[in-house]
Image (cartoon, rainbow over all chains, first blue to last red; front, side, top):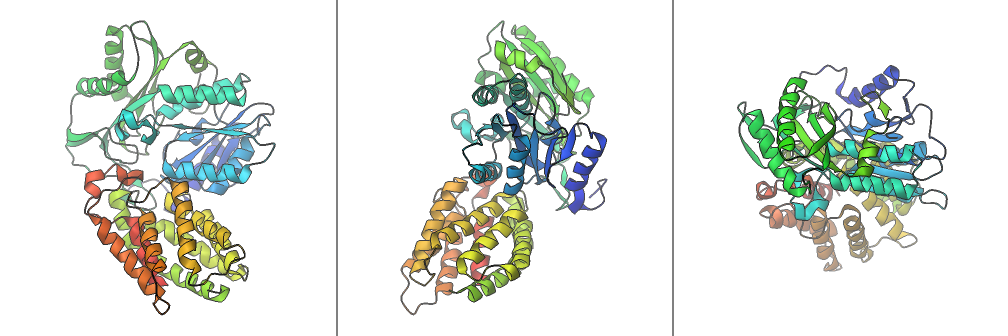
Amino acid sequence: MKKILNAPSAYVDETLAGLCAAYPSIYKLSGARVLARASGAVQGKVGIVTGGGSGHLPVFLGYVGDGLLDACAVGNVFAGPRVADCVSAFQAADGGAGVLALYGNYGGDRMNFEMAIEDLTSDTFKCNSVRVADDVASAPAAEREKRRGVAGMVFAFKIAGACAAAGGSLAEVTAAAQKAADACRTIGVALTPCTIPESGRASFEIAETEIEFGMGIHGEPGIWRGPLKSADALTDEMLDLLLPELDMAKGTSTAVLVNSLGATPHEELFIVYRRVAEVLGQRGIRIVMPLIGRYATSMEMTGMSLTLMPLDNELERLLQAPADCPFWKV
Amino acid sequence: MDAARLKDALSRWAVAMDKAAPELNELDSRLGDGDLGVTLQKCAHNVRAALPAAPDSVQGILKCASQACADASGSSFGTLFASGLLAAAKWLDSRSLDRTALPELLSHTVQKLSARGGASLGDKTMIDSLQAITQALSKAQPHDDLVALARNAASKAIEEFRDKPNRIGRARMFAEKSIGMDDPGMVAVLRMTESL
């Protein structure tokens, strides 16, 4: 294993310590495995909590900040957060106006958040849940509830965060988050795996000359495995999968995220974005505030994902509202 | 089953989990995140540490073990195992755990696990193993060795499901590839029954 670390067992805790040391005015630990806003819960604002495994920075914890999230329960690399940490995250985010749990659609994360909510049930604590399931390769459209959450989570965080910052009620923030979660679709392609620190194992195995189209961020099997194709051919194939699921007529608008899974450089992301802009332009679809960079990763995995989120007026306004965390400023 | 015997059984369970960890990691790395053995080892470590201070009742020990497992990890299997122990503890309440109560207790636990994790019978998970054990124990005669019955049932369940696909969780996505492979969670249940 070739990784810059001290001890595999300290990987997550030392990452958290470094984040808090770098950005003390934004982050603080609220329990060993809960990252919260340094200034505490915002009184009167709906809190938004998320949680999930480590190894995906900036997802999940990185998006704690103004106009975004309030607290995050942090698990080991690629493992769900503990129930007790989910409970602490809810408490850290609760400003008295209710809390939305907004996280990716993974069995373990769902169980842990549901158990935390059962622990917290009281007359004064109000809570809703929205799960993001945007990975089109992880199940067919007819079984959308089985799809897993990937880079589309970033858009859901932004939309829900903006709604909460603007004073939205718990019902309004939940509806906005659900709208974003329902709207976004993502497809990824993987070139090389990452190594999980505690096991020292690669997240998947693949031949030097092969890529896997549709592979999930933890190495879940995708749609096909084969020789590398050109950027334009890959981009076209991605759009061919995403566009039929989205109702985007001429003259409509969409958000676009071209995301590196970790090791793929910005250069290659812009080569892909160039083609995305070309194809959507030909169709008369307007791109609002494109995001190109590392927004949802799998440590040093090579590969990228493309996310589209068609926008109505409300989503467009919330997407462009101010937000501030160390990884994303709007 | 009294408190002393349960503590003793959990100690043996913990040793077995340490021993089974490499095998379970290996099996899980083919279909899952490869951390099932690590997860159960962490559970075993926490349970071992918590046992000396556990209350002197079957229910108290189960609750204590559940908490210890929940604190060990947020992995799906760890969370499910913790909620299974808690469901068993709550069901017991003031009942005593004897031979005749065991199938009913297991059946209740299977229902709770299924509700929590979303798996149904036939999905090729530990639920199928626990259901097979429940059925075997419910047919037990007064002088049968219950541990042997459970072990056989867990072993047969693995064989029965070997050539079926996984239908839930990360393993679901390997559908065809999972045919012919033993489900890591089902193997974990077998290793647990062997430790009793």
